[in-house]
Length: 219
Image (cartoon, rainbow, N blue to C red; front, side, top):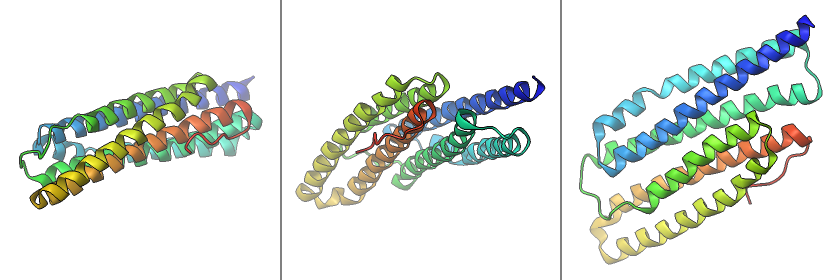
């Protein structure tokens, strides 16, 4: 009983840390977009300075997971849960890096006026924030249906990114003076699109946890 209790407690620690990471990534993405929309370089620099916090949590997850494997020798679904926690932590850390990249775009723009109102980029970010939250919940709750929702949401994000890219390209053609900022904004779209991809990866892992088979939700 003690072995099972120790294993359950370790798995619960992993789930708690993953939820903390997810919350921090959601907040970082939201703040990064706020900094961009408001061309707020002060906020952007604060986001960049907090980047190491996610690395610290990822290290904790690695240490706990490695200890569980070494001392508890989990098998089957328990082992999958630990291995998936490693992958999720890595995906979340990369999402955090991409949010920092968005903040860095704000800094590079140096407070210059936006060449167009930002509507679709914040919408992309909003959907991606929801994906981050729901992908982690699909793992915590072992909710396969919620995990499969990632594929539909990812398609929406991809469609918005394509639309943004076309609009920015048209702006660059019409007015070459917009090229520099338009390129930066297109990078932001790509960063958000990648965040959605990583959230979809987590959804795939949630399905793998429950079924032992990994679907392809990111087509």
